[in-house]
Image (tube, rainbow over all chains, first blue to last red; front, top):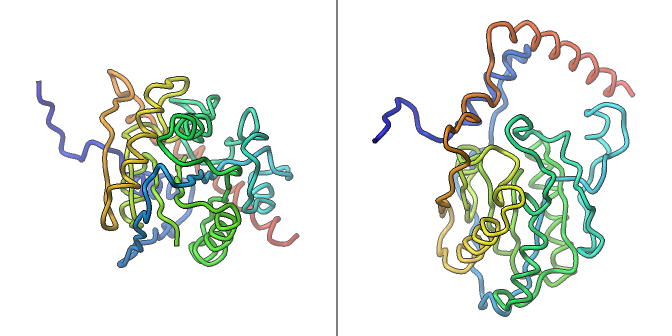
Length: 168
Length: 107
């Protein structure tokens, strides 16, 4: 049976978060970035010759600080060896659906094992020996002018040809 | 510049921002690479992400995976839902948070 609804079927997180924060007494809604021009870089060689890497917004461990706000201030971009990946990434301070699901399985949001399999079975040339982390930031300037160039530098150090960004 | 693909579930935010490539799975936020412990689903999403890296030829290319979270899809009604009796509680939480933020700024 076809179900009809007056709304689009997928959730609008822009609408939901605006209403949620308004309920918390924040009068000025967050203004999401809306880029007119979207940069696009073509993959220049076959995947079988590419080194592929992963970038996450999750932390390796709970950052120092008593409150979420304090912990947020101590977060920074990082590169970390894949073979020393944490058993569990720290995700509790991030905004995801903690009621309906969980992040106990790293590969459901940071698929290092799945990427490694692709390197082993020849789907890609290799997986980067390091993965990268970036903090979620309300400041769009910090994200584009500071964090993104830092991540690009780390990728270049490791000879990365393509980057996968799983967004929690 | 390095080719990128975003894999996630907040479709409106990602598309509003605009990215080179986006692999969308209509799941609760938290598991953009498939259900926890479901290796086959995760492999399939990885395969689609790699295909998107390889075959997309222009920016703002979105592909949707075919996966469904659950039969009842109850999660859609729960997430960030605000009931009347939660309003007061949220206002209190917001006030406490603003006070804490002010404290952090002073430090």
